[in-house]
Length: 404
Image (cartoon, rainbow, N blue to C red; front, side):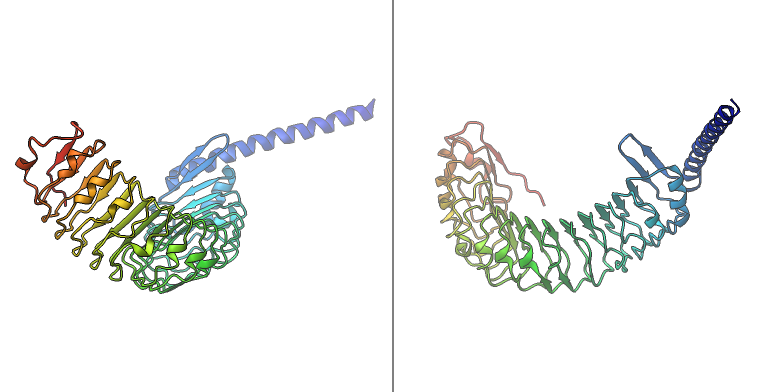
C-alpha cells in the first residue's frame, strides 16, 4: 500500500512539474513576443504552417539578442529585415536553424552576410539593393538554397560561392563592380541574371548549365563573348541587349529558344544568322545601327517582332516569312518607307509605325481582317488620309498619339 502511495505521489509531482514548466514556457513565450514587438517593433504572424517575422528597427545592428528572443517564441520560417537602417551584419541568425527564407532588401548599412552559413533548410536568400554589402563569403554550405538574389548590391566585386548544390536561381542584376563570374559549380541553375553588370568580362562555366532556361546579360557591356552558350539546350529566354557579341553561331544552335532580345549590336545587318531558330516566337531588336534587311527572320516568330530605332531599315521585305506574326513594332525607324510586305501577314493584330516619318500610306489595312490597332503617331501618315479607307476590319483603330 505504501509503495502504491509513493508511486502516486511521484507521478503527481512529475505532473505538477510538467504543468509548471508548461505555464512558465507559455509565459516566457508571451514575454518574448511582447519584447520583440515593443523593443524592436517586430511584426509576427504565426500560422499553423508558417511563422513569419518582420523587423526594420533602427536598433537592430546584428541579430544576436534578436535571435535569442525569437527562439523563445518558436521556430520561424521567414525572416524579413527589409529596410532595417542600422543592420550591419546577420551575425546571430545562425541560431535560427528553421529559417527557409531570409530577406534583407534595401538595408543601407549591411556590409556582411555573416551568420547565414550552414542553415540547413534555407531555400531563399535575398539582399536586393543593399548597396554596402561587400562580404558575401558566408553564403556557403547551404544544402537547400534554391534562390540567391544579390541584385543591386553594387559593392560586390567578387563572388566565390561554394556548397550550394540546389541553387536554381541566381540574380546579380546591377552588380556593377563584379569583374568575373564562375557558375561551373551550379549545373542545376535555371535562371541567371547579370543584367547591368557593366564590369563583368567573363562568365566561366556557362556551358555547364544544361538546365538553364533564362539568361539575361543585357547591359553587361564588358562581355564580348559567351563561351559555351551553344550547350544550353533548355534555354528559352535570352537577353543580349547592349552586349557587343560578334559571333552568333552558338546562339543559332539553341533548340528551344523562344524569346531573343538584342540591341545595340553593330554587327547585325540582316536576320540570316538567326534563321535556324525555329522555336523562336519573339524577336526583339532595338537600336541596331546597321540592320538594313529583315531577310532571314525565323518562320516561327509569331507573338512579337520588334525592330525599333534601326536607322538603316528602309523596307520590311522579308517579314512575310513569319506568316503567323501577330504584333509588329518598328517604332523609330525614321528612314523606313516600304511597308508593302505587311500585307502578307494575315494574322497581324497590331502594328506600330510610330516615328516612322518615311511611311506615308498604310494600304495593308484594306486586306488584313485581324488587324485591330495601327499606331501612327509621329509617322508620315496624316489622319485625313486614312478617313474613308475601305477596311478589312471595321473595328480597326488608328492611333496617332506619340508616347515618349
